[in-house]
Each structure stands twice: as structure tokens, then as C-alpha cells.
Image (cartoon, rainbow, N blue to C red; front, side):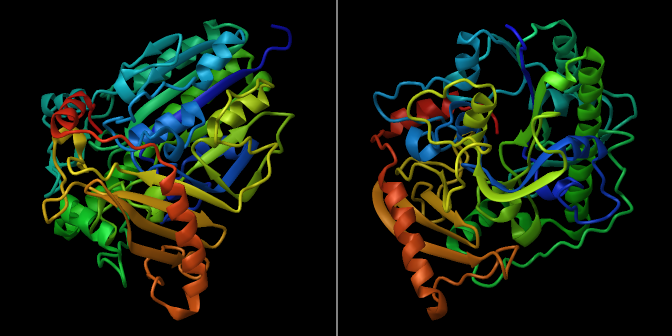
Length: 473
């Protein structure tokens, strides 16, 4: 291919935007200089949000350009409606157009699907991390609720598996075709927090100011999630460890990114390579009594997105327009001059107009639905299945509500935040008369969006099969 352009996609798992110094971290000691290099050379999107705050639907959206509202892929079962035809994913589109496509690391798509010509999952097995911790005699600290490993410190020089991803991508950059699409897809900083020195204890002198209360007017959905994850049961030491090891894991990730960027420079490809850095979703680390993702609170919903291309995209630019996960596929294809498959819902953020509002969705809302499908756990406190919840965001407001429960459509547990005046989105204004018209408009938009979600009834046996197939989150 003449004048071939390559793509280097670096992807983290469960990475909060505020864990990166280019976005502004909770303490000045926390620095991510290598990831910041990508931001300094390209465009940083301040208001990027995941299409779904859980792994499978978010990853499916990024690769397919289809929102969960359009695909029906809404939780980690990868449950899809009857007659579902897997969409063409952008690595497949590019392979057909002549690019070589490679993935190193985590995939996590419905039914174990992979759209890459070469797919190496080494370095992403959670049991492997736990085994490494045990073999090295690390003290393992677990959360009281879902038992997440929130601290396990390994000796300096110990590898945690993800180094295989770094080495594989570096080789691909040196040996791959002139037209190459390669992804480094790390498990970190997703729990378990098994981190080697010198990164593990790098921030042990930092005292994190963590709000513990649920907050004024927290919605029922978040309270139920807090009940399941039991973040409020973390004692002060465990809460600090949760933050310290998480940011230590991000420091390890930043080092891996530096290794890859150095390999990119050494390969001679830098000027002809688009670099994309992002994640599937963020995570709560114990603040407001919540652990893990799954909610639309900004620590879970907001994600980093960085795109650089020397000489073609402005360096050091920061943009505030609304961006979501399904925009990744359409944007990469657009930058490469390749038409996106018909029906995609994502936009090319460098060519298409910014939306007035974006949507996210999670959950099926059937009687057998579970918050943790791979564990067959996480029913509502009254025994009902886990609900479906839809979020709409505008430049200023966030509204989310429950749209399906027990197999029936509903519209309840409305949460409305004014993000301009409440950036942490803890005050619920749904019943405030001054915001009545805003609530009505956004609630209508969210309900209309939910009405378009493909739905298929599934019995208890079917859900049991899906949960048996679901990979760990």
C-alpha cells in the first residue's frame, strides 16, 4: 500500500480519567509521563464516556461502532437478541482493505469472538496474577464484599504477565507490515491489584481524601450496587490501599506505554502512525461506599481518550465535546479513509458534528439477570433480577433511570445531576422544581432510547448457559 498509515491502539482496563496526570490527578505526586506524551503530541478529549460501564458491552461498542442500545449487548454475558448477527468490526473492515491486524492482550467479547488476524491473549489471566502473588509470598488484602484483591505487593523484577503484551507489540512494530493495526490491550489497572515494585508502593506516602458517605440523594441503583460490593465496609487502611495500589498499577501501565512508544520511535513508523489511547470504563475504588464499575458516577462512566498523529492532528489540543466508546471505530476508519460499515452509530470525532447528547446502557432487566453473571450473583435485594439502566448526558446534565425490571418496561429511580455545579454528581435534582423541564426532556430522551433496545425473552436455563460462558470481569 502506497503511503501506508498504521494504527497503534493502547488500551487499559478499568482506567479512570483522573488517574492520568494529563487529566488532573487527586494528588500532585501522581504522574503518568508516558501517557502524557500521547496527549502532548495529539488531542485529549475531556468529556469522553463509556457506552456501558462494564467490560463486554464497552469493548463490543469500541470495535463495532455500535452502541449497546443498537446491538443489544448490555452486560458481560454478551446476551444478544434472537437472530442477532455479529456486526463487522473495524479490524475486519481494515483487514479486507489490506491492513495487517494484530491484538496482544485482553479481548472479552461475546462468545469469545475475535476480529483480529492475529490474537495473542497472553498476560491477561486473573488467576495467573493471583498465583504469582501466592508464589512470591505477597500479603493479599481482599475487599470485604466481592473479594477483590486490593493489595498484593511483588518483589522488584517480578513480571505480572502484561509485559508479554508490551514485548509482542514492540515486535509487531518492528516486524509487521507497512500497513499495520496493532493493539496492546492490558488487564491493568483492573483488579486484582497485584503490582510489583518499584510501582506498587510508589504512592504509599500519599494520603487520599476519599468521601465515604453515599451522598445527598444517591439513587437506589447506586445504593444497591454499594450493597453488593460493600465498599463501605472497607476500613480506613483498606480504603487507602485500594487507592494506592490502583495508582501503583497505573504507574506500571505508564511504564509499559513508555516501552511501546520507544519501540514505535525506533521502528521508524512514528510519523505514519495514528496512536489511540483509551479504556473500556473507569472504576470506583471505595468512595461513596462503592467498589468496581457498573454505575454512571463519573469515576466509572468517564474515560480517557487520546489520539495523536504527527503532522495531521494538532498537538496539545484539548476538546470538550461529548464522545463515547462507539466513536472509536468510526474515527479510526475515518482517519484512514475507509468507509465504516452500514448502520454504525458512532461518529468520526474529527469530521462529524458533535452531538447534543450521548447515551449509555447496562443490563437486560430480565427476571434471571445478574449484576455478576460470571458468578451467578447479584440479584436485587428483594430477589428480583438485576435491572436495566440507561443514561443520557448533555454538555451540562446527566440523567439516568431504570428502564426494565423483571422483564417489564418501567421508568423509575430517576437521577439527575447538574455536572456544571456538581462535578462529582452526588446531588440528585430529579425532584427539584427548578429542574423540572430539564428532567422531563432528558427522561423522555432516555425512555425513547431504551425503547429501541433489541429485546428477546430468555428463560432461566438460557441465562444459566450464558453465565457459564461468561468470562471473568
